[in-house]
Length: 366
Image (cartoon, rainbow, N blue to C red; front, side, top):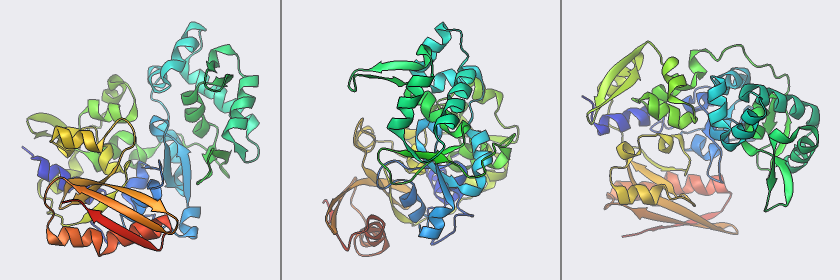
């Protein structure tokens, strides 16, 4: 029997949220990808794990559309293995990941994996130099037949379906240029997709290592993959544990750390899409339904305050010129040490440096 405190402390340590510093090479979340959505995305996820995102460090990262079609940061040196890891497991898996695009392809007798390969080939033809996404989409609409296309009412134009576009980009060896809106795509220098991902980048194993213990359903939800495909690839070297009465699995090598994990006192301001918040067992992360609704609204997610292994509130920044106001909404009375860590010490100042502002004013409600 494992309680939620042990689960959360295990994840804090597995994701290195309690370390003072590190490098890209030893940052575990880059094995599964750091989602880079919003201004406090992938690079902020690295910053709260003690990695300074210098210009030279950024050159060693690559930004790809991968899991759930979202942009994620990885080490550039790992890109071939990552491309193998994020590929759909089967035609049914590809169909689930591309959502509504699968229906017209099926009606036309086109397999989902074959469709992704076709889109990737056309992408490779089109993107020979850095190209804005809209221009790429326009060329694809000219090159691909009707089952790949949809009419977009807001644009009053015909486009390729969004998810096949995104998921085929890695297959085509294309990366995204950071800090571009709309996105700019360009070829990954020297790209070759690996034959297999290997254990380190295998997404099921990475989920168990960083967000375990977990069930096949939880991993499938994270990947947008069918549960059947995840179960078929479930690792053999797992140990079963029970969390709040539910049977889950953890990699056998990690079981001692789960059972004997030390308590952590780390205080961190997690970005809205930080990996810690991506776990699919939200009731384990945040048992209170009202707090969960506040943390994961339909639109406009806040960041989360992590203290002592628990999520204890939310935060929202508002930038104005060279200053920023940080509004913190605790779910309980914060200790003096936690409040000081947010207001007067590293967290607020680190966020200010990340956002490029000279001053940050912190307002802690209550």
